[in-house]
Amino acid sequence: MLIFNTYPLPPKVDIPHTILLVDTQKLENVKVQNITQKPANTRISQGREIIDDSQLQSLKRQLFNQVNASWVERKTLSSDLVYKVAISANGEVISYEPLNQIARAQIAKTPLSNLISNPNTSVSTQNQPFGSFRVVFRKSGVLEISPWRGFRKTPDVVGNKITNPRLLRKLQRQLTTTLRQNWEGKTTAKQDLKYRVAVNKNGVVADYEPINQVAYDHFRETPLPLIFQELHGSNIAAPKDKEPLAHFRVVFKRNGSLDITPWRKLR
Image (cartoon, rainbow, N blue to C red; front, top):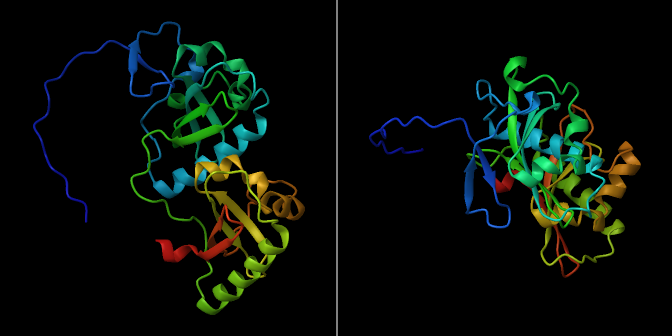
């Protein structure tokens, strides 16, 4: 049960139209600067913003898949570029808003403008639900995406789930065998790589998702993208399948061992 404290409302203060500029080198230092001639495709309304954690998690993955696959100029950035990005409930990028001056100047080094189907349409005029995300193009070549307001609680897995204990144990053994046969037990990561992996009733890998940043950065050192590519023709995009799935927490440990446990036990 959540408990909220109540406090007197502060006096109302009129603030001119501004935009926050974030210094990504020192995120604690936030500057405020007036912006003129703001493009139409950067207007983000808060009227129908999606706040459900599970839906945000799903949209986050869809946004990551689109941006990561389209980001070509990864090694040409002199500093981090930070944006606020809106994505519709069906996974389409609606708008973006630069959050620092260099991000505005170097938008061409990101794929954001190419991902918007109609650049002249803003979120506020489309009258549809959307999710807001903070997208950071790191100069190191790493892409980071997180919900604009963060998660209120740990997101649950969306979709139908396999819950039969006997079947789950069987699928866990199958997944363990599949991954052990395809992993050499090596990673250059300095931390364990953690994923959520889902399989269908036949033990076929149907979905996978990194659940820590190092797993995003080193996913190619695991057998998951190769397995997924062979099965679905893509190494990142989840198939649009509504069949029930069994979800597992998979950890590729730095010492070469593999740890697989049912996802439900973690909730």
